[in-house]
Image (cartoon, rainbow over all chains, first blue to last red; front, side, top):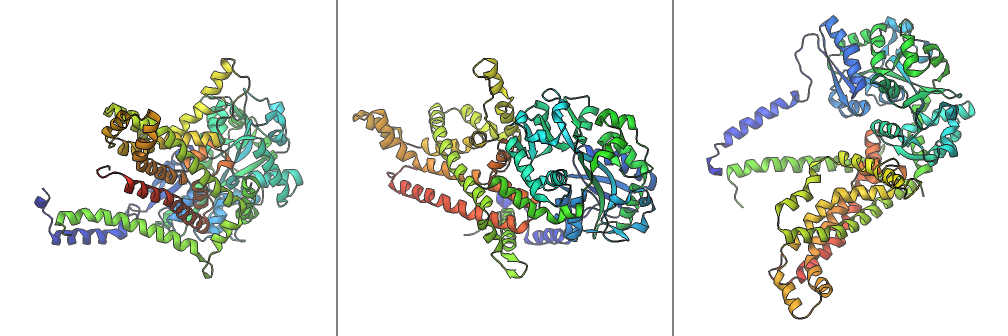
Length: 359
Length: 276
């Protein structure tokens, strides 16, 4: 049987040669497209779909430049792993993640002068590299609120973040792992308890107390959504946008509130990877994304609220899904120095692991 | 050794696989040994110096040992049952869980073992207890999940050896007056030992590298080396630490199964001619 296989050495060499010649082109995004293409790395699920509908397709219709979202578990990992031959020319990140990538030399700064719409973004939300450059384009924000199951906890019980360490909720709250607590929980607790996000001792102690009071430390949003839905975790510090999405999809017992100490703002940026394919198209897309219209369109699908001062957001919708009007919400949100968060993150993760893992 | 051209062609994917594996491993080793100023053992020193990583390392091996022992104990009667029934349907039933993703099976356990899961709800509903049992988010949950996932591997390893045991040896021992327990200890167990040791080795190695089950059924205190490396690689991009942890994990796993392999050889050598 094997002897009938007609494969000469010459054919084998030819096939190998063709394959070898094709290698430089394998893995590169579809080439030879007029005007290029936008290939965005984004988290799977809701945000990816929202970007496609609110940003991508209108941009494609307006410019003729094709828009594609590649759903990845981690946008930072996606950019780092393809850094030597960048696959993406647009990417969506948290502020701290964006700062890390910039420091690693994976992304390039954008010039403020190139994006006039940035004049409508409040100064405190601009992730500056220097006077003339930003790490990326700030587009919208969510918040890290007290997310709870209404069947098992009343808002009155959750007036303070200290509820998460109370006996009443012993083994009934969930908490994120040190890798993400270093980004959100600890900087916020530090600020909440001392008025200074840099006084990390207080935040670390508070996080440790929450871990000891928790039923488990969740490892993914899917897991925590299930914990909250089933009431196995009654409350936790968590992304409010999950509540928005659940309510929009037809209701659930999970709701969100902002305790008296406030809540953490979670801002997001679009980045321009270094050595990316179609850099001009990518800059054109960033200019489009800096306008108010796409961010406003994305609000309903994601619950993320635009930074753009001229964005007209339906306040009734915000109140319906978040229980607060937009101005009321913004007033209660705390925005830390994300540069400091990023700068101290790796050491903080090690410290948190030592606190909760060491025997 | 002579190969036909087609045979050589078939070697290409094998060579590709080996090359990819070696490239990956070489990259991993290089990353873990190279510091900012060249050759460095800093990442390994950091691993040993941090109490929490040592604790994760020890916990991982404790779990591997525990899960291996439980899997072998539970798999042996299963393998005996399958060998005696000689029906492919039963073997298929043992293998069927392998067709379902580990994530899905682990989520299944979450629904059963959770604080408001099937068991707790039933026990509270039947009035057996008023408080919830903590069946997951602890070592118990992780062990249950891992044993469930790895039992088919252990069963098949034992079955492969047990099914080849010559029944006439058992019949002969019985005819000479040995009771069932004596037959088991003196005949069956020694002859099945290579399969048992192979099962233990396989389960030990698989448990060392477990990621999903400890993450979902355990809590932070049940972190294992696989989960730690996952975080270091994909969340904090600390490739040096991840590389050193992976090297330590691989070496320690190899060292841990060496006694099992030696015992396997010893038992195999002691078998009468014709067995296995």
